[in-house]
Image (cartoon, rainbow, N blue to C red; front, side, top):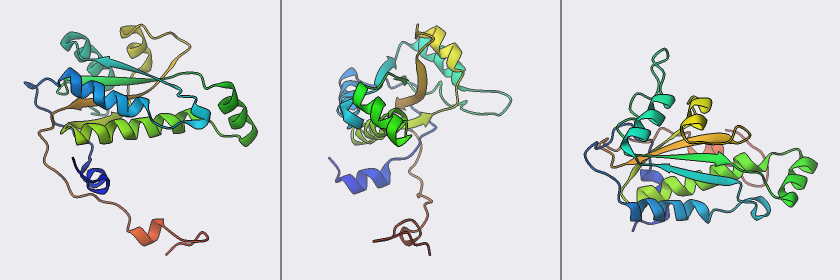
Length: 184
């Protein structure tokens, strides 16, 4: 097991996967458990995770994530697992707090759960890529998701064949200040 900072530094969006290596169910469940226990506003837990690992269905979901016109997401069929994250209703206290503060907490909570899922996957030796570009209606139909539910993200999961890339991030001093807002 890695220390957390090393884990966070190593995690990347992988776009190449070993198509001959399925992901073990135990690993999928540990990754989902890390997402399930994520913190959320007023413990509302506004998420539902749909694991798609049936090869035929997974390929149909992958087709719904790619577009020929823009050339996006053509790598998604390589990943043996897709985890769709569906937004659920927040509880009363989170909803009221969000209304008072004019903040929608559900997307923030889902982001936190997704980050934990991806870091847990990295810890298991798996690669991930978070997708927000997909045909939501097509995915809803494929997976029998009710029309009143929002499919927020698709996290693909598998054994990456992509080499580790150096991270391109803003330098520390340009994104962090102490005791007040300051920029470099």
